[in-house]
Length: 202
Image 1 (cartoon, rainbow, N blue to C red):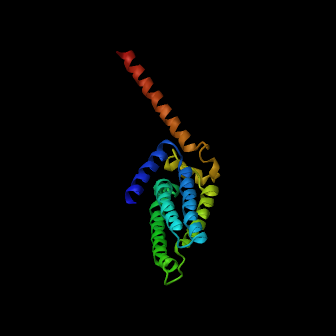
Image 2: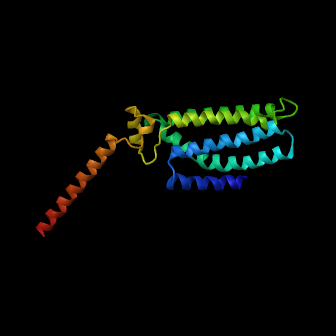
Image 3: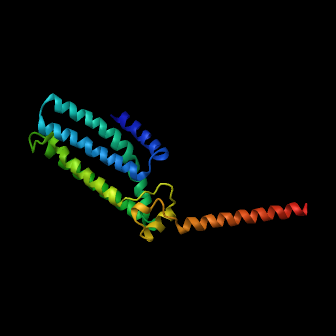
């Protein structure tokens, strides 16, 4: 399973650079997670404690590792580093990492109570919770997450400061990029004039 997860991250990085934008990667990953959680949940609800439901759980677990790990998992940290303001990046990412650890501990602490036969004995029905939470995450990404592929950190800051709608991030022409382009053209023109001046002297 670890090898499959590692390979899926590599494949996901290829798709991120060559095929899809970051928003699409997260939507594929979280959408795949919804399906991956619905499968075992339905199997455990319709045919609990049967070989068929066990096979369903294993199959969808593989699907989860490949799709979520390769698409959403590989993009989570890069996007979290890009989406925050440059001046607050260190504080924001440190706080987010702390929140991540808290929820990871909460999940690890509560999961046995849902799954174990001596407690709530939900078994794979526990996946209903994760299917719902991933569906909510998918909706948040769909409506609010902009795509930042190909944008510099300065451009991303400008887009947020100007409150550009998420769907217009990829097409909006930033003033910072226009100014940078003008500066480059001006420098090239200056270099061209200098070369011509030197050639005339020779």
